[in-house]
Length: 216
Ligand code: ADP
Ligand code: ADP
Ligand code: ZN
Image (cartoon, helix red, strand yellow):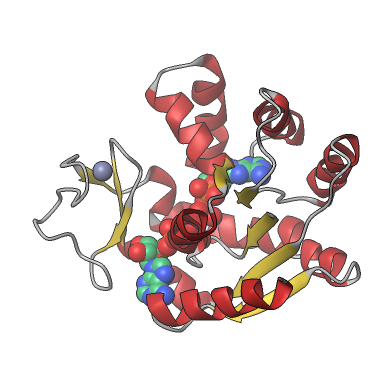
């Protein structure tokens, strides 16, 4: 199965993606996570990408497509995957379609998590991320058992630079201009499934599961 998880920043893509990949044995490919990993390792790719990410801009299509291409083709093992946060532009979507053609494959579904701007803001501003494993928490909606400590690995939690209020607005504007057109793009191809992202963690998860069960 090949899936895309789409939605505005802070919609809950990463949270749901982590659960879905476990249940369906998919490889989780998150471009945001890949950039942050690379930054933590002080690789030149990550250091360059963070210059854009920090202020809420997109990383260039060229760089982003290349890291996805490498991941999909590196060992030819990525037959079942969930892409989280890619594509974010029509150009990236076309590049993905070309890659899938080469793999003689295609997408099964695109899940769009729908949330209003108000919800996005409270989710992003309260988000805390683990500095070691990347797990996410929320100050109000999903606090860790011990303040500022990751439940699963003990890492220190931090607030992403781009989750601070100034960058959040930028990210939302950019989402609307560059990424939102993908909704029509996938709708017209009969691949789009919208789920109500304002439900509880479990409520959203159940909606996504219902979509996936319907595909089988
Ligand atoms: P969120 O989960 O809040 O939507 P991500 O972790 O997916 O954020 O991405 C964080 C940042 O990484 C984005 O704001 C952008 O700067 C960069 N990024 C991630 N994926 C892409 C992409 N497909 N194209 C361009 N930039 C990207
Ligand atoms: P995205 O990957 O789309 O940027 P995340 O999965 O990181 O979004 O979620 C953003 C923030 O909102 C996190 O702090 C997360 O704990 C919280 N969150 C995610 N889904 C829900 C939900 N259904 N209800 C309340 N908070 C949520
Ligand atoms: Zn952790």
